[in-house]
Image (cartoon, rainbow, N blue to C red; front, side, top):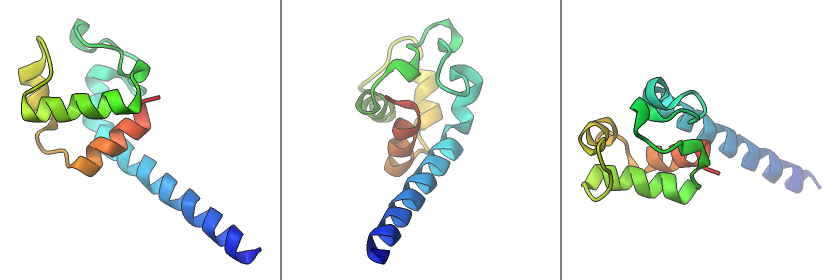
Length: 97
C-alpha cells in the first residue's frame, strides 16, 4: 500500500512540475494570447485554448521550422525559436485540451 501511495505522489509531483514548466515557458505568450490562451492574438490568430495538445505542439514546431503559419509566421518564428522540445510539450500540455 505504501508503494502505491508513493507512486501516486510521485506522478502528481511530476505533473505539477510539468505544469509549472509550461507556465514558465508560456509567460511570453500571455501578452498576445491571454493567460489561458483565450485571446485572438493581434486579431489574427486562432484561440489556442480551443486547440488540442497535439495541434498546439505541431503548430509551435511548425513555427520553429518554418512550415506553419500565415500572417504571423515571421513574428511567431522569433517567439518560439528559443523554446526546447520540452518547453513546447509543456506549453501544449498547459494550454491544449
